[in-house]
Image (cartoon, rainbow, N blue to C red; front, top):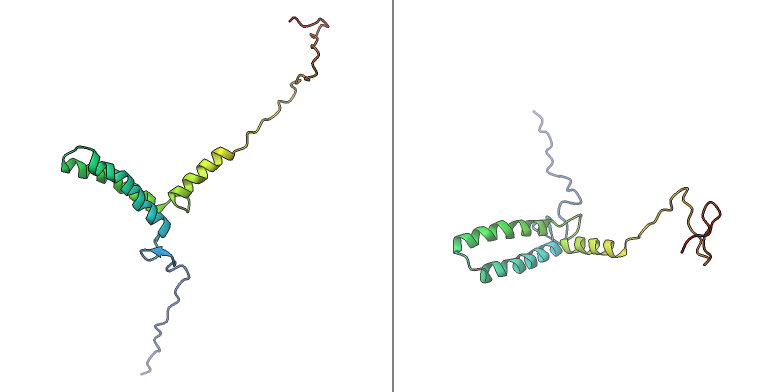
Length: 125
């Protein structure tokens, strides 16, 4: 009987692990740093300043900090949350204000003269 050749060579895709990321290419470093910062910024007042029993404090921190950390780790629109916030601020500060002229409307010419009415009478002041 003939033995078949067996090959252990596999093609590894280029995006299997992305360098510069954490957890095997799943989380970007910038998003992880921002998540730690945001969770610390929101968690510190909840932990030390708000007077609550321990059980309620744990529930409140779970409800607020866990979703905040997950959203900060995921990022928004392909970037981190602060990049997304900067894009929103930049858009609102640099947006163009468009004005469309109305069709068929006669705009007054600013020449300093008084306009006459349609019947040829002078306008009342």
